[in-house]
Length: 211
Image 1 (spheres, helix red, strand yellow):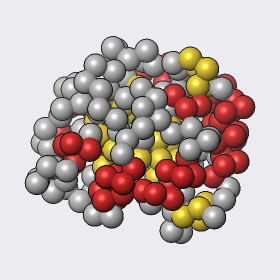
Image 2 (cartoon, one colour):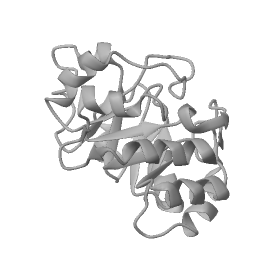
Image 3 (cartoon, helix red, strand yellow):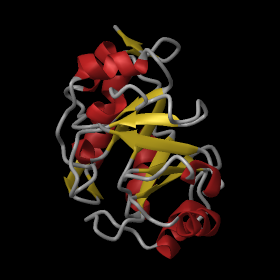
Image 4 (cartoon, one colour):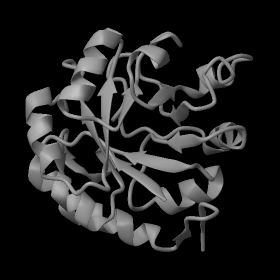
């Protein structure tokens, strides 16, 4: 199961997330975010991680040249475009892309098809100011219809208490968790991290179902 813990700002939180079971870690390179991390600090953290961890950089309406430069510096395995980026950026950033969409955008006639099939769609709660990490859930029934069409990650208010129900309803390719395992923005709660992965032990990764 692809599980990304996002908003990492400290090495000990990164290590705790990996020890708990995270397969991917997200680093936010948008300066307006309370979880912003300088790329050079991110590089220090990434250098200490096991090779199997997928490192993802989160960007919001930033030039593709900057995105590509940070991706090479850190280095990043993938980039997450969490703003209003055009499809052309997919070719320019030089890494696999996760594109964050609101349900409203994803449900428009060409909301999904405009993005190449190799792009993973991430469904998150709408917030034009904070751009994620709000702790608000999305409509899981609507998200399930998106997940049935193409590879989709689910974000938005996922916690140790609701993650099993969310997976059971949406059947996503993976999940993206930020505020649900935090003490404060950018500071992870290690007990909640472990609780999240304990909850996920009832899920069967081959079908993203939970018993």
